Length: 529
Image (tube, rainbow, N blue to C red; front, side):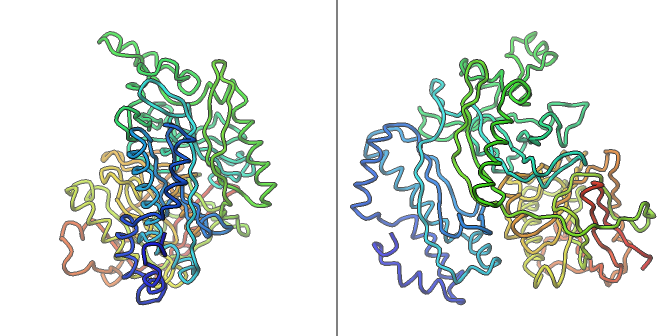
């Protein structure tokens, strides 16, 4: 493709230090508009004849992406082709998807990641995998019964009796896009395979709060991907085995029935996990693949459910998983005086045993952030990115980033909208449940965001100040001398700047320590400064 379009010289310029980003910007645009060689187009026509009008997924499959140690999770695109229309229209859609995946090799996020991993000088051949989408038709909609991601090592054991070697799933109904991405307003079902009934981040008083509400499907009539509410899709797809993936909320259903509404389903996957061999099949699959790779693995899968719930699982991707293993045992103090404590939690952290001295803290104030306009909230993300890029290396200035809701959400009302390239030099990121603002951390295990954290060695903490065992003192470092505070650039909007505090904490001795066995984590001063 590159040679056919006369871009090889430009690619060589892009591989130089001065052209790494500058040349990539124009290449990224042109790669989406080039011409495929005629012999390739003929092969694509034959492939479309073979598939017929079944939907197709165009997946990236690069040399570095599929190797050990560099999973590139989410850096390169995968594109759904609903594959409807005349043969000429279907070929045009497929070619556009191929060009889009090729162009993603020159995206800023991918370039930053490659440089961070010391791979900027390595050749990155991009192959493509064209897969028929696993699923079935429900009228105008096409979708698998359920889908998800699985990892053979559970590094987010939120209870001390969970077995990390048992593996974990992130499970959704419909297309698996909601399993690999942190979707605003929705939660995948996280399953610890040794104890599938155990629920993380679940408020016992509101069992539906952290469940999936929307489902991604392919709309055959409109020839595009689409998102529907579960309650919308259920009556339109009567043979969809929702009863194996969800439970009827009887109280809510009674209320809606009185108003002429449809039954209310809560996507919990409890019937599937408790009454079928689904969990055992996935656990056996993960163990088999890990043994074959001689390395922990990360998979994507879909499942077809028979009328009696019997699952047929399709493995659609497997790649090595970069894991954060536990270090030596960490000794935590039994008690810490409140004036020396920034925050503490039991469970809800990731990264194994941790003993990390901190040099800097970047904090986004939830109250002030919530009062900003939508434009200003995006500006907060850019400001965080500015401070991130100002860090030389993680080792030289280990930094804690803490803020409300979900880092990386595309909806600023649910958290600060950033790309991973905006936080890639942090040592620790923390997400805080800001109850009043409605911003809640999302368990990111198994998502692309999780993979970024794992591969980069960034520890993760979720704080729920209203829950037992969680303590949070957001005013802790505001009591430090003014000289410790680092100002935003002079041209920063005043309200945006006021919502982001950056403090040098080296003089305080602040450190983050965690014991994965006790499931305790502290961010504290070991001694008085």
